[in-house]
Structure formats: structure tokens, C-alpha cells
Amino acid sequence: MGVIRWILGRIILVVEALTKPKPPKLNADQHQAMVAFSKQVTLYQFQACPFCVKVRQASRKLGLPLAAKDAKRDMAARRELEQGGGKIKVPCLRIQQGDKVQWMYESDDIIAYLNQATTPITQAD
Image (cartoon, rainbow, N blue to C red; front, side, top):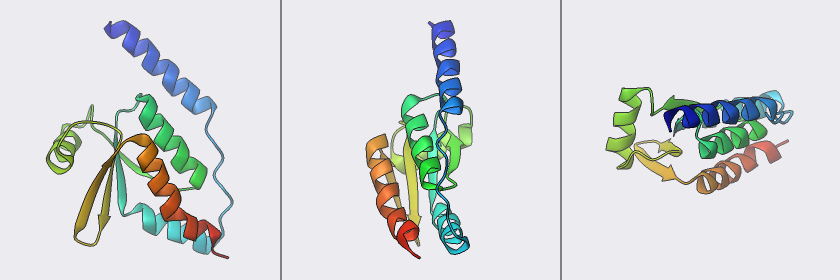
């Protein structure tokens, strides 16, 4: 079973590499705003998880440089995820706005949040 999982993981990563979306063309102000926003969010992931790939692809499509922590291999990240979010489940987006921290699970919810949060940035002229 481990060998099959390893092979499927490699296939997922190859497909991700071959289908990387191109980021949008952003002006300097939009790029700065995206970088500033990206400092508020961190993606907890497993590298070959298809739902994590879906979130990473969506962030690339938005032009959002998304910081990611591998909760499978990085035990400190795994503990952060379990203590902060309450469970080891990926993908999980950690959103920090000031002193308030929110943990968001589910790839579709994460993508919807990223789209909604970055729309004002990409629509600005």
C-alpha cells in the first residue's frame, strides 16, 4: 500500500508541475499588496495531497505568494496545526489579522476566501 501511495503522490506532483497556472500580470502596487496580504496567511499542507495541490494552484492563479508548511514532514508545523486548528487535517489555512487567528479547513472554502480577499487588490488600478 505504501508503494502505491508513493507512486500516486509522485504522479500528483508531476501533474501539478505540468499544469501550473500562470500568475496574473500585476502592477507594482498590486504586487506589494499581494505580498502584504500573504504575510497574514499560511497554508498547512501535505505536499502530495490533491486538495492541497488545488489550493496551491489557486494561489498561483491569483499571483499570491502563499507560505506553506508541510505538516507531514515538519513535526513543529504538525504540532502548530493540531494545537491551533484542533486537528491534523489538510489543507488548512491559518489566517492572522492582528491578534485574531482563524484556522480554515476545506480546499473550496480556502479558495473562496483567497479569491474574496484578493479581489480588491486585483481590481485596483
